[in-house]
Length: 130
Image (cartoon, rainbow, N blue to C red):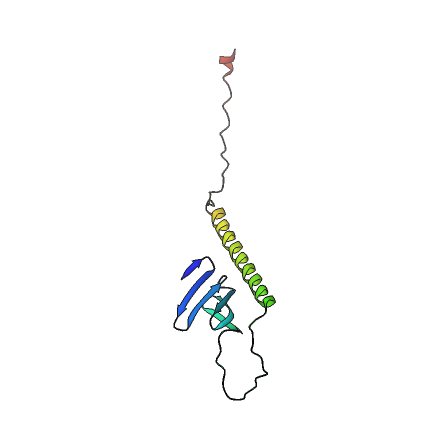
């Protein structure tokens, strides 16, 4: 559901998630971690940045004795700034589009002007002047 412009909340059987920012640069935060997505028209891309709840295997595989804590505050702040910047650019483009529409509303095709040529005036009657 849409909470505010650029803020969406989703609920599923896997938990809650939130999407923040415009479609062109959206940050997703939820129980499965943090990710970013972008989209234009029918195309889109998503990248998982990490974090979230993960199951640990009991087998030995590559653990170094610490768990991944997710993206750093710096990374999240940078993503937030990028999302805000993209949102501002989208708003500027929307306003520019509205302005272009308003400016074009009054444009009409007019006939090209023609010069009217008046006939030569008649000479006054000399008898009437005397």
